[in-house]
Length: 490
Ligand code: ZN
Image (cartoon, rainbow, N blue to C red; front, side):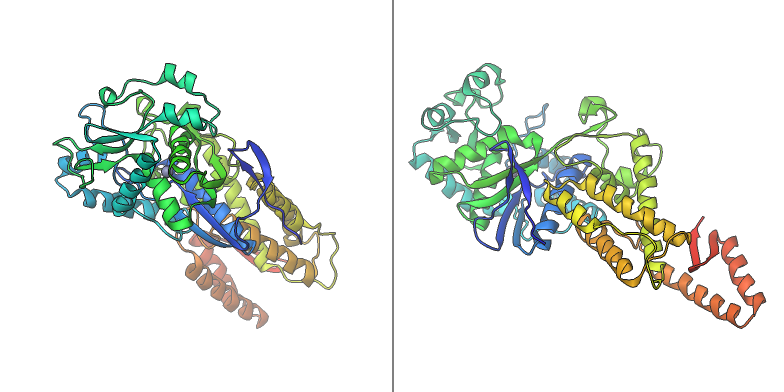
């Protein structure tokens, strides 16, 4: 079938037919984590959203180069009390090398992403590994006349840029509004205008991460790393740039200004943003004490959680909403997602156990086309899930002996679940709710089922009953159905 993938483009504010710049190849850049703490829910949603896009583009036959950066320097999100860079502060408090802090949290981030079945990107560049490239990028902006040096720091001249181009095209803001709303932050006295943002910052004496540059011993501004590494690995113009909606302004707006200033044109063809997550109706924030880390979700170890939620429950829950809508986390909503996922996994297991009949007694609609149409419709994962549950009704009725499916229909259904549930939604089917690998365990129980079947055929009722009763004592439900034996954990 012909696939026409329509994606919402934040820059053009419309759903557009996706056309890559180079036939067969897609360049995709997604803003990655700032590594000075454990990953929380705010990290899970963009990672899962762009994992779905990464999987789907590859499924459609594109060769995808997916770059997701690691912000390990220059994020001007300073600690409110000391004004220190957060990585540097952590390093000082815990007596670690700054790179030890980065590695520690990066390892944990990777561990969490693996648990969520998020595929690793093609390239994961560190900002700290691209200082030379960032200095060269600043030079280009200075040469073009859109930046100025001030006391060892270099700032982007937003007002001048706005006279020649337009600052604010992505977020729809205009410079007049910004002039009235920009708060006074550090370095104001060095800037010509409060809106100007740092491309290079001179390091203060307590700043432990700094590098030499033509302007000062210092570090690059946060917005710069993405423009620089995007250009380095994907070229001056590439297909997709993604991230959370909170990055649209100022981060992505500043990236656009930087690339127009340095290259004379925008770098990105499609801007895609996932919407935010709230927790029980509230934004995640320090003041609400609701920054729940992924580890705390997996262990149920945060006071707001009534139980633990497995990585697959978190993933399934996030995919139950289209990526551009908001998602609200609550225990009730997560428990509902847990039940729905269990139902889905039961359907998947029953589908594997079904035996073909000579003739189908029900009509199996073209669920595959429906699911592809949903994926093509700006990655409408909730519709894909609803389609799988629709198919599940037929599978359940076949399992209960109320319907029969021939070999062709069975293989169509198996292809549907393997393609949509396993490959594209990335749901691990071989795990229990807690995320443990169940395959060896399932294999062992299936072996016992085979022995019991042989015993029954030889009318060895004692062995057959013994296996059933011992398994029941261990918490297994063994049911003899018309299709054969079915087992589940009670
Ligand atoms: Zn970025």
